[in-house]
Length: 393
Image (cartoon, one colour):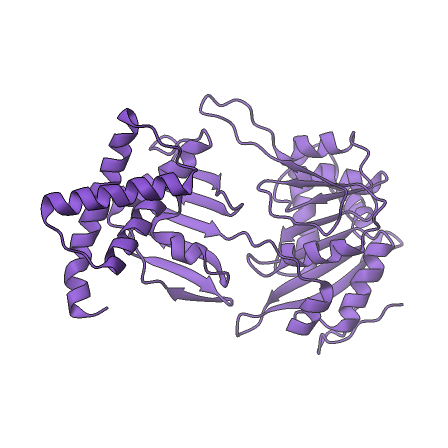
């Protein structure tokens, strides 16, 4: 930014704030459909001309258009984050206070030049989305999850849990239509791995995709769903709808948080029980992280072969242990041996994904779970060292 631009930036920021307030105030006497882009744009440009004339602010056409875009984004868009949300390469937006904003692009973090005016500006941004979903964020409820209009997931946390101020994490939602062949071309997995997954899905093997956050678990699950036969009914269960299955017969269920009165909560475990009554051929749980794992394992063991899910874990062995622990927490009276047998009977294959040193997503391991003489065995289907080929037998 040049020196003149730097000098005018605070002036234009104050103008944007003033016009935004004038626009909101005008809605009382002259209502406006905020979803009608043309109406909003006309009102904003009218206010810009009025305010500029009143205060004697001379602006170029480029500055006027930029000011209008900023005001419109404040009202019906993503505010200062709008350009980041329009960038298809940005997968995560991390706001650590009003002026410390980071993004993830191509698996690597970088600092962004955009920012909010101040803490109050950032809070207004968060409250607009949280309030539209009947939720609230205050000292008694200092953390909240919300869903953005495009399906992206927003998590916000404020003091006293966050001493630095408001912290916002946005996981971008990308409507991915990549095929497994596309992922092979990008180097995420080999052709042998792809064929192994195709055979597993076709043969109704229960598969769990494991890995860390942002490693591509959901992307891979979406992609392999293309091999589910068209004559089968799928029920998906998620906290926040992210799956975009390549299938024409999908029923999507989404959990619901409790309202401000502490009522109306519908968790994943409840949705799983509903799914068992919905004549599902396959059940797909976007991610298991709590007591719902117990019901998912039961579903996999009582006629829903070929079901899919994801779980956070550092390796396949840890994924199995984590499922056992979560299932034990769900039913403390069940003996560990019974839970272990349930896990071994339910899970047929684990696909572990991660990132390499350059941030690229990779399938690191595909293992088959076998139980012989009451002992669990993990059979590595990919060559342990090179991870470039798989056995299909």
